[in-house]
Amino acid sequence: MVEQATLQSNKLPTIEDPKFALDNFNIQNEIKASARRGQVEPVLDASRFTVPTCICLDLEDLKCFEAVERQYERWGVIFHNSLAIQPSNPAFPTYSGLIVLMGAPKSGFLEASFLRPVNSVSAFVTSSQRLVLSAYDRDRQLLAQTALPGSNLANSDSPISPNTLLSINVNNIYSVTFCTFDGQFTLDNFRFCL
Image (tube, rainbow, N blue to C red; front, side, top):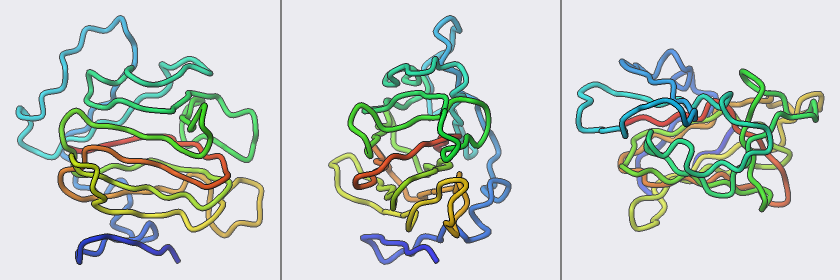
């Protein structure tokens, strides 16, 4: 059972909740965001969307061992302490494709900052330790947290499957952090919704 912690009285669903199934997000419009520098794409303008719109990052355009920071800025997100990798360790399988993100050079930590506030952030995570996803407002005040309660490495005796969906749904998210103490983790299918 996953424990959920929030600062407000509103209780977020746990990761086992069927509401977290990707098909149940009631997403009207999803954009697959590319990191390709050669494509001419306008900066994302959230004001033009009238239905819930989600941006799912296509990590396959990244090169292995590429530092990831401003590649998705035109889509509204900037990463800090993030590296694109093609996992060679079978304990960290990908969810889709070959490339995932990991916290590096400082292990166990990754941050994503949004140019405009978002209302939902999710990713499929595989971690060697307990992993906490935290959401913050414009003033860096904690809005909500959710956690992977322990390791979910592939080919281990963990009761939690690799690539478990972690998600936070709360208004006015300006940044999120993924943090694990003394461990490694990978993220795949990073998605945020306006």
